[in-house]
Image (tube, rainbow, N blue to C red; front, side, top):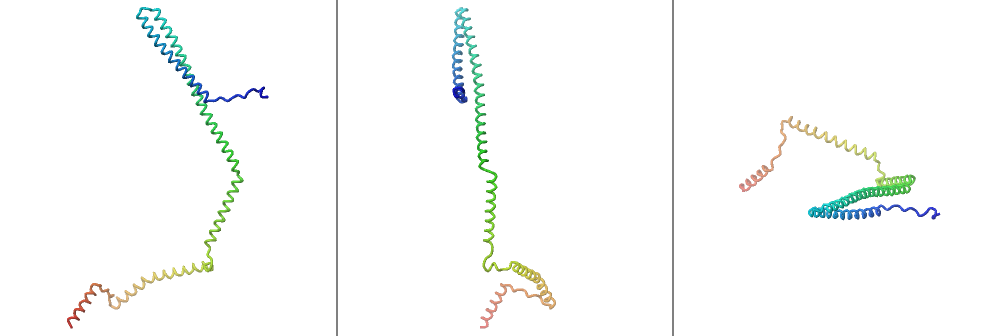
Length: 217
């Protein structure tokens, strides 16, 4: 079977092809430099033959120069084609590498999707919700009063608190009224409310009394 089909066709190696093209390009550049030197040499020879009045020899030099220039032009065209081919291959290489990366990414995503089945995701979310509910129940149990504090009636305590707040409010409202009533009684009796004696004046009175007692002695 293998004899009938022959050997499997090897896939082209882009890097190896680029390397060969680059080597060939360097060879063409070397040849071009050689022909350029020959052109310069023929020009110098033509000048010398012209000075020597050897017209036929000078013309032969110019003919060889033309041939060399044609070869240089051909080499330049070949170099241009090789440059163009290298650019195409490098672009194809980049495209191939991009395609390979995309294939790997697609295969990885496919494997991940197989690993993440929808049933497994639903099961995991159910387990998370179940554990969250258990934690809430544990927290509520820890905050529930125990012992004597558990026997207290919350409604009764709130009613008592409201009563205390009401009494406090009544006291605050009665204080201004009591003060106003006392001031009114004092005015009606013709008396002015006693003013506090300054501390400095009281000290002076005490010193005067002590001085008088010493003089009496």
